[in-house]
Image 1 (cartoon, rainbow, N blue to C red):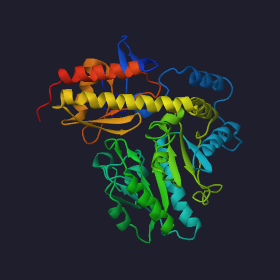
Image 2 (cartoon, one colour; image 1 turned 60 degrees about the vertical axis):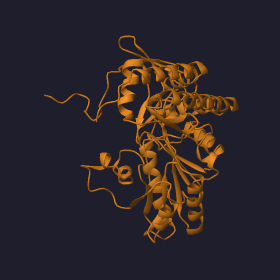
Image 3 (cartoon, one colour; image 1 turned 45 degrees about the vertical axis):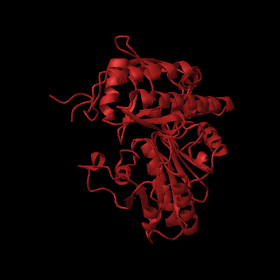
Image 4 (cartoon, rainbow, N blue to C red; image 1 turned 30 degrees about the vertical axis):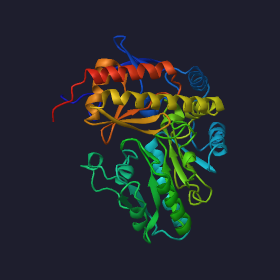
Length: 395
């Protein structure tokens, strides 16, 4: 038998973590890595955060799972905290970002169905987006690497150019349900939406009775220096999908919605066996315990300013390789003038720095939000050393 026990859908590298501590990962042979990937923006409190670990341990010893046929004191508590701190009136808990997006799509379609307009089922989505790997979420994208071989895809999506308000508005027709987008594209290359773009979409939704869905799976949960990125734009969605950081490493996602947008989501319209289980709710509540303290967000803002300034200061020293810095908060992208994936591998294998490649030749820097100035200095030192001994691959 030639196939591996783990289905070979990932190009796994030689880093094999067995332990984490704060902002570091340790491999099987004791090698240490500075983790500026954070599980792709998941481990926002780093590894082994004592409050998160204790909450999970105590809940695991008390109650891990019960059916959603029963009441959920744990889920009600976390949902109320999210409602109190966001635009939303109601929350559905999932196990992942893709599931949260599926719920968001269904909620938008069901809204128009409940209003007597079932023909309004099409969502306008945007180029270079990433919303997950389910059939529904890959149908919402235009990326062949995710779609090839999985046809026929689901109808009901139309992809237009990101940040092109005119194209988005021109795509609206009698079948349109709304817009679905990431306020800051992650996989696409750390590309923030322009304020004019988001405000224009919000205005169109208000004027035409459409639903605005934000995918804050990667950019949400304090990653950009506010609890959610939409706050910095002053644009409020009707529905929002979140995941990644909200569990701090424990699988957890959620679909947040206004009461109006969720009017069609009544008993029997959606469900999840594991979604909202007590163990996940304990993790989510523990994360909020930490990040809702004002000093925490101030720390994220200070560290993001320091990291961005350090990167911008470093770039002229290696301008044959580096181009610019983009992004918000501690969701930063270092744009290269050559293949970012090769440089990410070089940093990992030669210098013990873990980063993540993205589209448009961007290296994603997504550190735990608990980083200090010493971690930033170490990151810049490793980036500079990596640039010095890096040989650009010949194409």
